[in-house]
Image (cartoon, rainbow, N blue to C red):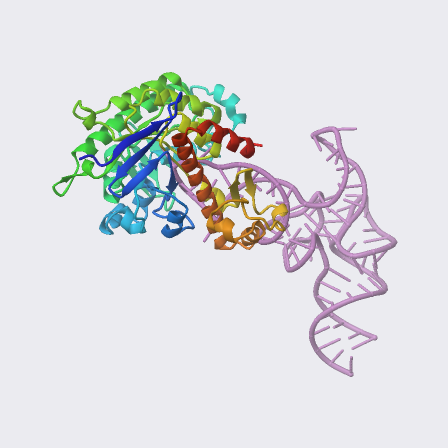
Length: 417
RNA sequence: GCGUCGGUCGUAUAGUGGCAAUUACACCUGGCUGUAAACUAGGCGCCUUCGGGCUACGGGGGUUCGAGUCCCUCCCGACGCA
């Protein structure tokens, strides 16, 4: 009995897109679905009832953060992530692979998950020695076996191997977990991407082997928790395709049952590289397993991802943007603290059915931001999550009804105007 | 009336001869895509061909190459004594 089962209900004709369901031990996820990020076992500024009310189906937490604080043993003692945080639905954990990037090569350089178009020339020029000198001492040192993290909390050193990451994720106990990978900076030259990809593959295999052999009492953990392998390869077609093939073929016993339960697509991108990379990968990955595009969540990117065969996406955007004052609307994003909203008595997004829009005005939420009131971040997060979750739900419905292209066109026409 | 202290960018402050002038808050504008993030960057006298120019530390006058800083005087405020 596998930890999850994935079934496809309908495909989006002429594309890689599909509608399906993932059945987990904690409920069914109707895909495509937006995965809410709750890094430290909490969706920031929201309680679980609010997360549920917003329509979220699944929450993703982070191995690195929970390992440092409060410690994965405590979560295990509490009965696992879901119980610990009072989230009754499905859960996921990321492996810490992204922190290899965000606390490593990206640390202190203002490099994010997505590169600005203006950095493209630098990227093209990336030299074998690396394009940008260290602005701050890195908190991560990578070697063959794993990665040494220096805690961003207290500077203490911690060593993650693939086995360690999976062991921690087993203790945390999410329904779906990720292999330990290296998310590389797009600023790294090809030779480095090559090297890092080999490492990600070795680490993936080790994650898989550890996972498949791990027991909890007399039960196979692999029957309770699903493991997703991660495809990397940066912007390079050769590496992306190789990674998709290698990850898809990984198995502990030569059978498909000995392989991953699903796949993650990782990487930090120049935005214009993302679509091709996703397509290269999803043309190769087995159709009958769920695919999670890691860390993506702007509306236009979600359309791209859905059409190109991704089933799950997580993103900090809705909650982080919300807490920092920006809200999604059908006519684009608004930064509420801006002067123009102080006297704007419309809902955040007129016509939106979320709790925040049903009960509060832009002027009020702007006032809360100016007053540094906690409710500001809560209301904006509720709205943003509702907006993004619903957008993906609408895509799903549109595929089922056969109106996806029309729906996409109509949305983007207003949104990108 | 006398004495003391004080009047610096919206507010509160730093500054005791080289200053368009510190810091904080407020204000304005960016940024945020597997969360180092309820965060962060920049701006905040006027003009600019971005080199600089002009005007400014209560008002006026003076000393000085140079004054927010020193001197005189006036105005205003707080406190003390009458």
